[in-house]
Image 1: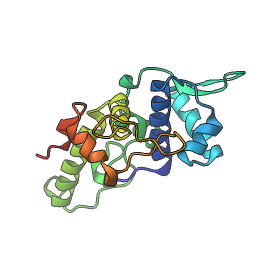
Image 2: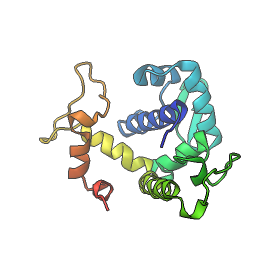
Image 3: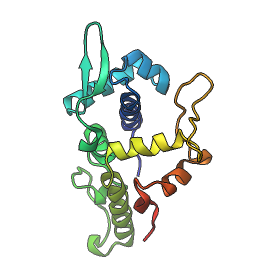
Image 4: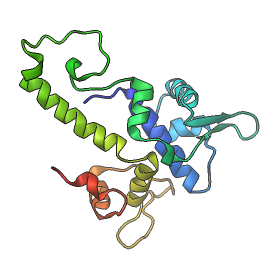
Length: 185
């Protein structure tokens, strides 16, 4: 499955807003958000507009200008975010719910590629819709703590990014947040 940069940046922005909110900073300036996540400002502003229309964030004007989550991060899933930004996503045209392109399989119902892609798509959807954005934020927060519970922020005191090579999956497997997502069937 492929998601666009737009959807990736939307997820990153929502996770950052959630992390900042949990640290007592619910409103984040758009400039700071772009800088912290290394996102192009104009591109981010467009994405935030889409997230605002979807009811996921609020944009504040005036003295406390910036963005914040408009509802609890429990109210939506990563799958919801991707669908709001990218629309229907699937690995092949014949597995999409809505498509303008015809499937060119000789026998659509007995196509092995289609069956495989449908199974792959179902597993991906299960993961993306099986957790809330709040749970994703919890996973990222776990990576900011080492096993002894000490803060592992970078030297400037900023939150570091989750990185699978430095314990993200290990922290996830130890967490009570979503251990079932690591199980394979």
